[in-house]
Image (cartoon, rainbow over all chains, first blue to last red; front, side):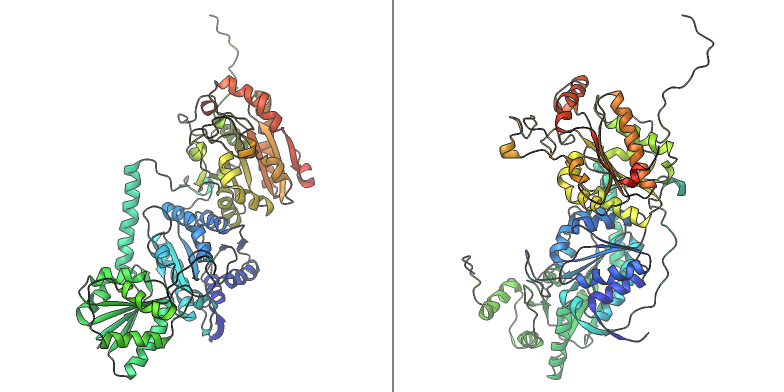
Length: 379
Length: 259
């Protein structure tokens, strides 16, 4: 199929539909809305379910209900809306039913703004909803990658009876790029054995996240964690660039990873032996490859569009064996490749340390650029 | 004692659709009656095996333990959204929620109004006992003015704590709702009338006529601090004046249904 120029949100919507999406429930929020709009036209055309819910609470609980029937279901939102969905996500995780969530991340906290950001990393990767659960998180860096990850998201969700989140920066949702869409897949016909469907179709089914007996709840928690270990063993995905001879490695996901690639290429032109590790699954996190690199390279630079959230996961793997530096822009500010290149040069030129926290060093450098940040309420 | 030869006739039996387990509901609580009515109606309609129920949060959080039908358990207040999701992908199934007043009329007001206004083809069984039963009798959105609860210890003061919500009246104003009625479970005549309403509500769904809800005034002797008999009388004397029984919305198409 030929490539076409298509917006990220629209592309993911169409890719989901072609992957056999049977029901979509959502609520408008910028910069995600085109995804909902596209499906509002396409789903009814195909006789499939589209509901614009009364709120994100409504949307995620409609997804919860439909997911309990074993159908392929999804919702999408952007950061503040995803916060509202956290309750439902926890229940869905606790009921072990599969679903796909698309979070088109914008600047925050609070209402923030509608510019691209990566500030939802902690909420999406390290929980958000209450209780012990994890979800698979895929972080695309281009419209094409977002399209390709969409069908995978459904497959993984169903294989592991889990939530898969496509966490894409607002820039991926809003950007138009050439991308090739997959062919239309038929709807899946088999209904999973665990699904509710009415007892005339089989044994009675009851799906709930309640478990008043602590030892029984612990068995359930154990099952979820065993499944997560399986996911960690089988589903790590990342992309490495110029890593073979790299002395310095930049680590960044999504848009920050893509911008860093431009900086890495510019540095290579200046004969700096730098490579890029771009996690595609930020959960599960590509621990082993980072561990191997720690043995080989001189230092790391983590680049994010947040205050260094993935940075903590990198530091847990590197464990002080090599210096880790950080560069980020927050609140919807997108870094330029030149800024990242300057940071790469700091790795090469500077005398780096493993003591202290890289965030503190970065914040003092950032203060020189953006000022002290004092707020007396007068704006 | 003389035994007659007359053949015995069974006049009372547990519905097949109800599991014969020991109840966890308090003595004098009307949840059991409501469960039974729902089970009887689904049986009479031949819908037991075609039904998916949505339990809510509150004392009826374990409703699914009593019904021998497929069930899911919703988050607090979200049952109508969950039912929407199920019904939209399985439109040929009968889908109902079973919710209390704290669940439906407080935290779940957004979801119930959304579902009713969309005219979702679901049935809502709504028990109103004017208190939060499961957490120990706190003030609910339905608590009467002056009513003493564990979180309105001197009685609900409407100046500070506002007024109760009349759910059936409120939802009846929505174009999407097709059948909205209020009944009570405080005596056998009203129980029979409640059953007819529940039957009608499920018929509305079966005929594809839209959103149906039956509000059932219910007792909570434990948290009201009354005997079961006193609680029954309290419905009659106090609740009925604030929550009049009646048909608040019967769409023209629903009025055509003959039971």
